[in-house]
Image 1 (cartoon, rainbow, N blue to C red):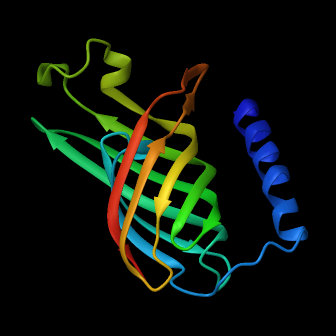
Image 2: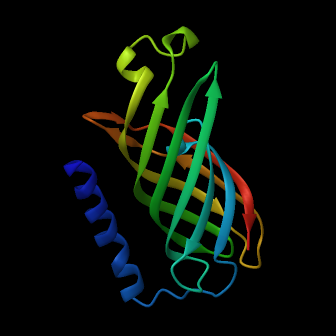
Length: 169
């Protein structure tokens, strides 16, 4: 978790000067809802995203929920990230950092996991989000694609993909 907090600190230090140098931002659709496949929700998650100002770009955050049930077992995820959009005219580079609370409860009879520790697990993972976002200034179809490097108890997965489809408003 110390590595995650260090990465979050560097992320925030890296984005704060952007606003200090007077980067011009436009008001517009600063909210979005989307279905994220893979990403920090692991399988999928339904998310709400907003900017912390009336601007389309800049600092914001997302919260979500994912759930899947297979052969009587279930997997739940509760992702949240602070993110920053850098770009203009609906095309943005998105970078973010956050966490995900995960709950798994599978019988090994479902055949999903060989390890009993993974079959029943509850805990936190850290995530970073890096990618492209199409978020029209006037609202409409929203698209995201990129990578979500994840950190969990000494494990680091740098190439976990994500793709999202939704609506900006």
